[in-house]
Length: 98
Image 1: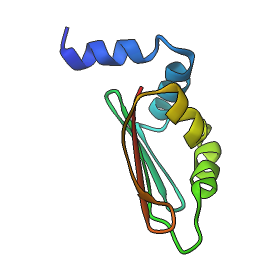
Image 2 (image 1 turned 135 degrees about the vertical axis):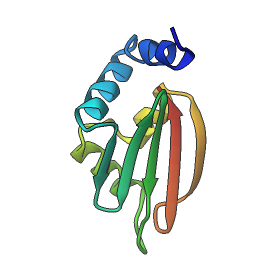
Image 3 (image 1 turned 30 degrees about the vertical axis):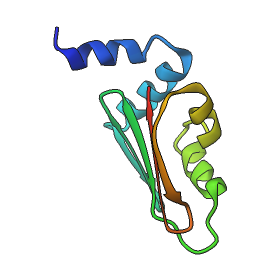
């Protein structure tokens, strides 16, 4: 079994992981909603928001909820954060390990 196949198997062991994997595989591992792009690459969930003036995390949360995924704070509390940089009013990136 390939290393990445093992990683994919572990994703479905947690309830949040199951939810994320189901939503993302239903959408071929990539979702674009407005200014937000959400991708799943093996075990890394990446959220990119190319914002506008006065955008907040609430705008990113809106896009996540529209795609049936948990809010940013829920992801950050439940999953290991690999990268978080920028700000939603310009360019925001969040990478978490599922």
